[in-house]
Image (cartoon, rainbow, N blue to C red; front, side, top):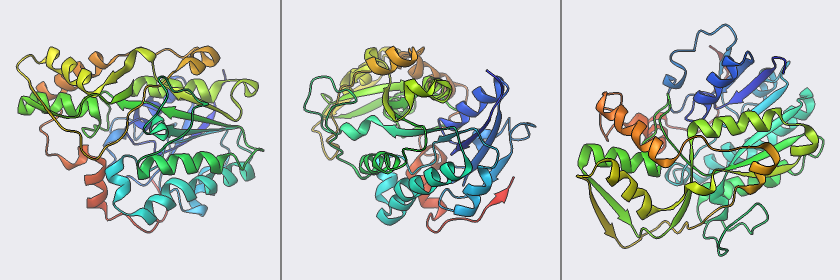
Length: 338
């Protein structure tokens, strides 16, 4: 496939930093629009790449978005406030970034003649699933502010039939990334076990689908490249059936890697998510198969801790909510080329 110009919103983030490197490696021209609320370290070693212009701007800035779309073939929409705690900080800002900006971007894509928009959603839209194994036709039952914004954004995209959109509902992502996160279940447990020798499990029987961050990036590329007749207007769960685990199972996998770890199970409080997900559709339509399992992610985090790449549990740059608190998020930031 010939090289394309691809806009990645949120390209310095947890998934975006992997995706950016993957696209550059195959010869694409990659343009990033990112406000860098979580820092710029995700692009540290590629920031000066000749095929990587970077715009420091807000996805709610219509002028910046229109400028970023000039000459673009494909858009990967990753920019969002992600995670329950992060989205609970300010309901109005969350709605404007996660929902309103989706409509702005979709309309701008139509106006600019963009070929394909790949949108990052989440399996959290299923919430407290009542079915044994949930697929893309299952009822949506969001139980968090973040999940509600993903449901609403998916509905917004449905209003743009002139645009070829693909919605990817990601399982809970894990693994090492240039932009490190320790506020994700697998990563959290692995880092807690290494530094504290102890994991606290709330409940433990809740099911979670899981997906390595590199596999998430690979799925995005497949969705971006796929023929229109296969993916246009489609929704795909992204993950691997083998990586559906209960929270307690994940804790036990961490303890298998670090046998001295103590696992304390306490009554569940607050988080009502409980869902197992089928990934048959993306496997059949796009040939997607995860390369990495939960054990791989645990090993990566533990190794990064041993090497000093992760210095401890208290670094606020490893947490979305702490980064947002420090940034004073609110009104859109103006665009600056970088």
